[in-house]
Length: 268
Image 1 (tube, helix red, strand yellow):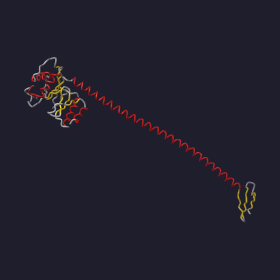
Image 2 (image 1 turned 180 degrees about the vertical axis):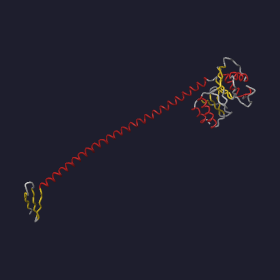
Image 3 (image 1 turned 60 degrees about the horizontal axis):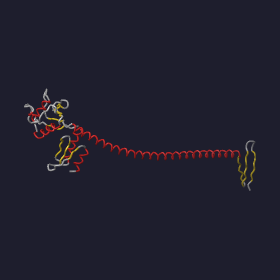
Image 4 (image 1 turned 60 degrees about the vertical axis):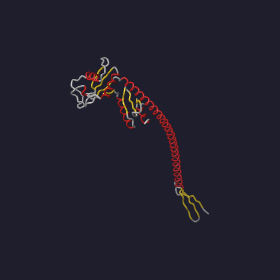
């Protein structure tokens, strides 16, 4: 049988003696109380930390949820932006095509307005030359009737360059006269010697209709495309680019814009 005795050791300390069988065990109550208080404080601290951790986890969870909601919102906005971008690009493409078509219509109108403008290439340059006299002499050779009100002016194009003969641009108020000079050049293949005995007979003179910059580029592309697909004829007359497959084919295509070049490919 166990026997418990409380024996005060001094005024400040209380010991408890627990007898179990033949053995006695002394326990200091103050130490027990101190340890119990420390354990309680430790448990309170742990409980406080757990509460704080729980609050932090809750805050983190809310932050993650907020971030997730924001992410979803951003994805939706990006999708909307992507859709708007596609629609905008489609509108830009349509408008660009319309603008390009309008530019070529304007170019065609501008080219038609230059019907009386021709370019003479291969005429040697001389010091103190009179380009007006050169044009009149060619017209006389081609047996084209002259009229003072039909011929406006003639001049060399560009700045003088060593080793390069600048072409002569002529402007007529009557485009029929300009066309007659072009035809004369194509049929008779005139040489520079017709203008001056000092010029070489092998120096060929070429007379052609004046082209705008865009028309010149389009004419070059048309010739390349026609050659690539076996079309034998490509020429420029009265402001229009024309292509024809061969001598037996009477019909020909008129090329007014880059879109018309596809006709050469489709009709090969």
